[in-house]
Length: 277
Image 1 (spheres, rainbow, N blue to C red):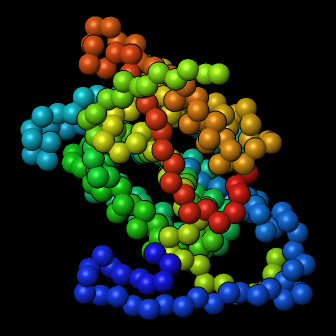
Image 2: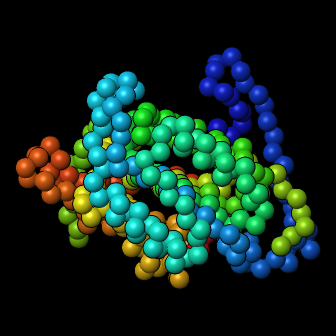
């Protein structure tokens, strides 16, 4: 909506106007590299919340969620690929709801003045509307991003990446057949700027994993290894989308409900620069 802002209620409407920043001659003397790319020369972090086993609790209707066989392969690949890129990596295995939130709060309160980039990987079960599974109960993914948004001011203007390997519903995708023929100026940055969330699947659909890991995490690591020296992150993620969409299909003939099925990752971002590892 260009001319007004509302909160979704028919009773509140406010007129707004915008101001255009006109760069001075001095502010124009900035290299394209500084304008277009995030500075990745500082500290880089990857925090992995990996889930293999769960508890039988009232939050899961006293039914223990299934073990996530193969998730250790995703952890191994993430640690190898991001370790080679100079990331400081922390892995949390089978954390409870409280432990996850404590860890995110603790990380967000660190002094991030020297930080260039932070990544979080959530490898777990999930459901519709942003629900992710901790060891003992579900929680909202949005609550995690809000903690980062309100954390140390040193993260303002720096990329914050989230890789979510989890289902987002119960639907399965049969697929469809396709026939091929350095300025001193001060800026106010929106709270939600400089985020990227890579989901393993679209809303309402399941995502897949086998003993060798998950479709999305494995391809993410593959494209980074192959193209990180020449491509920015958004180009690599676009290739990841294509590889999972075109090249991946489930094989489970003994379980026809998930046999010969497809998966489509989805990325949402508010990055304001390009990112090269």
